[in-house]
Each structure stands twice: as C-alpha cells, then as structure tokens.
Image (tube, rainbow over all chains, first blue to last red; front, side, top):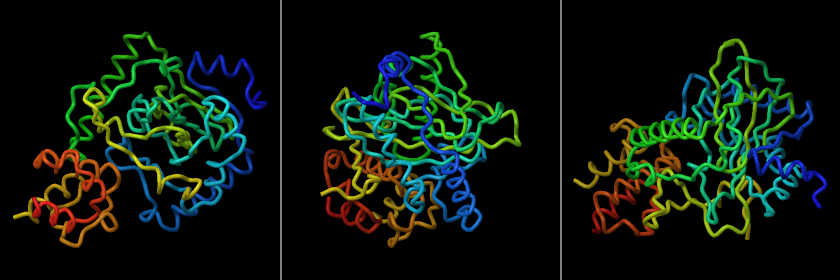
Length: 265
Length: 74
C-alpha cells in the first residue's frame, strides 16, 4: 500500500481526474522563484521560452529550466511526487518537461494529452505547483473536474491536416480549443478555479482539461511550475497534434534528450 | 532550385525570416527549429514528396544542407 496515497485519494482521482497535495516546502519554492528571477534578470533573451504559438498574452513561460537549475531538476525528481505518481499510474514516472510561469498564461482550456500521447494511452501526468500563495484575479489555474474522461482526440479526429508550418499549427490549435469549448458545454462541465497555497500542487490525469483564467488583477503574479511525466513500460510516445491514429499515423516522440533523469542505458 | 524550396519550408515551419535561412542553418542555430518546427518540416516534405511519408530519414534531418541533399537524391 502506498503510504502517500489514501484510498479516498485514489477514488477521488478516478472520479475527478486530479488531486491536490502539499509537495514542496515554502523555502524550496522561494529558492526556485529567486533562481528564475536571477536568470531572467541576467539573460532574459537567452532563457528558453514556449513557442509563440502558445502565447496568449505578454507573459512568457520559461521552459526546460531543469537544464540549468539543479533545484528545479530536484523538484522533477522529488521522491514524494514520484511516489504519488507511482501509486496512481502503477508505473515508474519519467519526468520530461518543466514550465515555469511568472504570471498567468490565460491559456484556453486544453488537455496536455493533445500534445503528449503515449501507447498504451493516457500514461501522462501533470504536476502543477504553486510557488507562492495564489491570489484571486492572478489568472488562476482552471480545471474541469471529470473531463479526464472525455474522448482522446488527435489531428485526424478534428478533421485537420498535419501542420506544415507554425502558422498551420496555430490554426490547428485554435480548432482544438474550439472543440474543447464545445465538449465542456456538451458535457455540462464545470470550470473550477484553483487557488493554491505555496508548495501545494494539482496532480492531474492525462486528459484533464485545464487552462489559465482571465487576469483581472494585473499587479498579481502567478509564480508556478508544472512538471510533465510519462511512464516506463509504454511502447512509444507520440504527438497527437501531428497524428492520425485512425490511419495508423503517429508522430513519434523520443524522450532521449528530455528525460530529466538523464541518459538511460 | 532545391535550396530555395527547402529554405521556404524551413522558414515557414520555424517562423523564421526567409533571409535568415541559409545553407548552414540547422537545429542548432535556428531558434524556431524545435520539436514542433521539426515535425512541421517533416510534414511539408512528405506533402510535396509522398515517397518520403514513412521514410525514417526525415526524423534525423537536422540541417538545411541535409534536407537539400535528401531532396536532390529523390
């Protein structure tokens, strides 16, 4: 029995598609915030950020900070987090992506699974950690409880062609976001804003819909970190945004360089 | 002809100005040539040259020169 997960945790996760747990100390969160601040102050242009097609406002998102921050890498490999994920997926987690936010992203509702697929399906986890006490109006994380059970979709399911440019990718993404809005309405999904305390995390299932709510308090920050995990034992990983499973076309993703644990023999 | 064609594909796929794509351009020096940009390049090539659709060589293309060489070999 996993001591870090209760039976109630597992049942709630199965029903709602997410759990909230305190995963980091406040001191560690403060250290990460300082590292991000220092890095951006020293070399803002040089810090890797999300592609512009995924920007919905002027607030940048720092990606792959684990590559230069031992502290952020340590979080991705945190044993308590890994233990929870092992308990929920019954497989060994593979951290492969970190994104740091300073302010709210205002990103429309989406599932990470539209970008990070696996075979067998749904071996993907998101661990979204508040690095400060979040305040209303900061563009809080929004989730749709239960939406993890909505259908998995790919490029082909939406009647789209494989993107051949970033411009086409952006169009495909917009079509996907419209589809999500209709799905939420069709299923009478309830959008819930989550106000976390420093060090608390939302751990979400592969297909849970989430996004950034509108920022109404422009002074507020929303310092946070999300780590994405796949799991060992999968046949392969793929990008649904570039795939059509119905005709057996998968855009394969290799984790060789993005496995935060390092090269595996 | 091949270079100009590849130049346009890479520019569109990576959201880079056409003039900044040279024969020496690669994943190492084009910011937008990330994993998404690479997939877009692969799709553009497969769309123009259907015989490349399941060709594993597409995945390992890492520079404009390599793409031009591949296209010239078809």
